[in-house]
Image 1 (cartoon, rainbow, N blue to C red):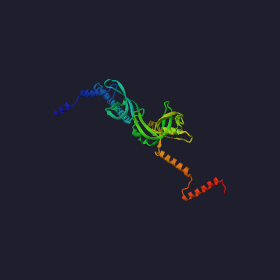
Image 2 (image 1 turned 180 degrees about the vertical axis):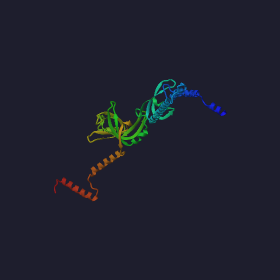
Image 3 (image 1 turned 90 degrees about the horizontal axis):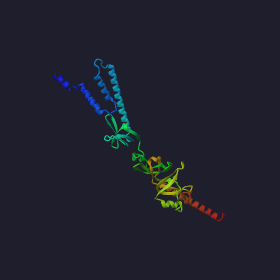
Image 4 (image 1 turned 30 degrees about the vertical axis):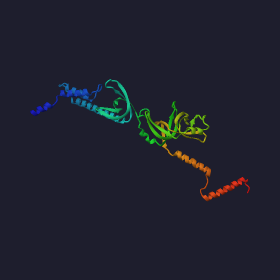
Amino acid sequence: MADVSSVTSTQKTIEQVLAEQSEKVVNTRNPGELGKNEFLQLLITQVQHQDPLEPLSDTDFIAQMAQFSALEQMQNLNNSFAMTKAFGMIGRYVVGQMTDTETGKTNYISGVVESVRVKGSKVYLLVDGQELDIDKVTDVTDTSVGSAYKKISDYSGLVGMLGNAYVYNSDGGKATIQGIIASLEQRADGIYARLDEVDVLPKDLDLSLYESPEAYVVANAGKEITVKIADNATGAVVQITGVLRDGYLDSKGNLRLLVDGVTLPVDDIYATEIADLYSSQHMLLQQILQVLKEKLGANQPTDGSNDETESDATGTENDAEQTGGVE
């Protein structure tokens, strides 16, 4: 008998179970939501207050339990989907709404998702040290405007490459330039690339103060200049700023400039290829060899004896020309 009394003393009545369940529901329930806890509460209340003369049939009870199980599985599926979606947002730029618990005002926060936290059935994104409910996210992008949240290490492979890039004017027109990507720089509004050896044909360059185009190059070498260029395809006129390295006259007699330090957003680079970093030295050597060939003769044999014979023959021909070709 003592054992029975001790067991009954530890057992809880239906009223106590209902009271505890009600307290849990009150503490965890969000206004406007009807979840599995509320469904279970309704089911228990229905069983408690059913007519003893007409109790709930087994079929109806099983049907309600099946509905409860389906509701629970649906909520588990929603939670799993929310977690999958949240983990996919890590490293991406989001904008969401947050309600201040003290003032009740709704504010917008934005930033890169650093991690994901799960509290109960809620999934939160950690953005700039704050927990953002995933259901309150209003916008998701790969990066913010200006690529401010991209890592400079993601573009380290571009350094040393020959890059083709767009340069824009205030009207939205663009021109294409090409240069060696010398370095990268992280700024507040994004990542910028520095292009060296940018070969441009200046448009409307004022040479009135210089005796010749060569004089302009000599006077401004090593200085920062701003020149206009026109795109061959679109005709758009843009400005570029950089340090003048050198200049030369092309086959048409136009002055072309080699400019270093042309800085532009890294996202404006649309194509890259492997560059020969010693192209300038290589071109210089080619020019030296060309000058030597012109002075020594492009078809001059390397054999010493033949050189002497050819020299004698050349001398004889020259003498013949001077004497009018008389034998």
